[in-house]
Image (cartoon, rainbow, N blue to C red; front, top):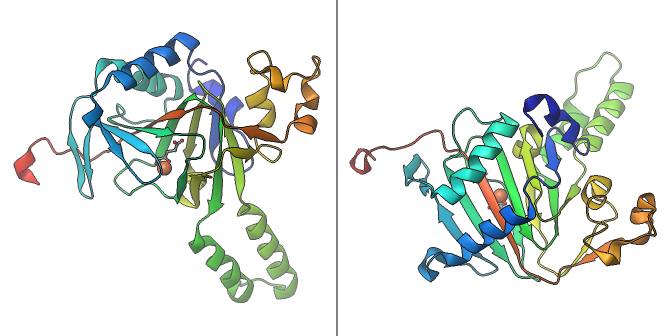
Length: 264
Ligand SMILES: O=C(O)CCC(=O)C(=O)O
Ligand SMILES: [Fe+2]
């Protein structure tokens, strides 16, 4: 990967814009990140009902970020993301680290309004499938457009318009392999909820990036071996079993930063 001009080669699926970069970091970078994450004091972990997380970069409020410097082991990865994607107007200043056991996930949600609408997620450890589902607002629009569309030939146009809308709002899934980078922005950020199912079996037969995600991993995962016939992967392996912990780094930019605590 070298700069923006290659980024479009990594777009997956049909919804603008989901970008999946396999092997964005190396094995040793992955190990280093995990070592640093688990070196953090236990008090750095916040336990939620269905996962643990570490918050780095400061506290995000509705009105912006009360910043804290990211440690060098994190700026190394956030700078790499900024440089190689060229999608962030200034340095990434916030990183959320989520840890999931094999039967843990995250409810479908939309990221908060304080963030610049580009999300970069580095995956470590176990693979998982992330599901994108259209926001309710869109589903409501879909029924509105069938009754309120203004077209010269109402019957035909409504038909076409409705189908187009429905096609565009299909749910989709992305397989996130360890060491990959997922970016979502534009429609996939604003019109979809994203989540991870809280069960240890995830279906991969319908993911939008099955080829991109699995072709690099045949050697790593004997279970995925297909006697050298990579194209058969989708036919033979429709489910992944999560057997180990997944850790992810959700890297984002909060544009509004409060320099002074008392100016809040
Ligand atoms: O763990 C992930 O890949 C997703 C995390 C996420 O969506 C979030 O922190 O908002
Ligand atoms: Fe999120």
